[in-house]
Image 1 (cartoon, rainbow, N blue to C red):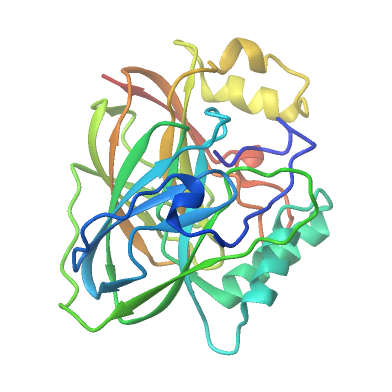
Image 2: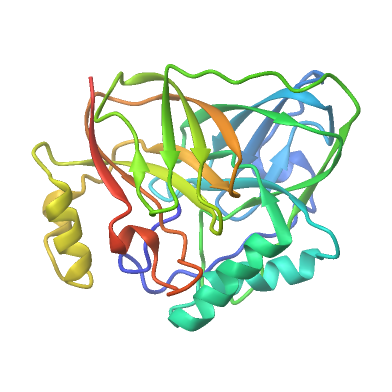
Length: 296
């Protein structure tokens, strides 16, 4: 999963083009369907079962086979805005992960300027998620930002062609989650452990995404914030529970929404967004974009 630099200072953002075909990361081509596709990431590469799908209401089953199961995959689907280039987007995403706040802020602004991000999913190794969204015709790209090995490479991308098809149709989930302009989550505090949520980025100037991470029962948002305020020297081992599957959705540009299906063990979780703020360069979670919830 995409995690805070407080938790691992050695990680760097890398995603490489799949050059060996689907088999390179263990993806077997499936029977093409006009509005569905299988997406597999291994933390730094991503492949899709078909390179062309039809516009309209599209469904993606997202799987991670990252050998580091706790890292998983953070897969983002996007298309370029006018005059943007993939090389410029790659540089912007690299900067957005900088530990220098001014550089991170500049990178975050550049990503918003150059792409329209439409989410997809965060999945831990061996887990999967189903994401439904509306796509219009055009050229899109996928990248896996989940694994950040320190090899110094720029992120690169796998293309997806969306051809003319059906019109968009409304998306409805069992409940709604909003990532707001105040860099907070507006969401119920009690969820079913399996179901669907409609995620919307209602901000105007920043990307948002959402991870669900398992924490110790009784954990509070005040404790999460105290850990962040301690610059990672707090009681993280007592709060966060390793070894459990996690889930969530990838980055969305302002105004976009996606429908996500999830299935997690019942328990206490915390919602996070670690996008770097476009003004301060500080990750949103560190300044309060987290929410403790219970899955039943």
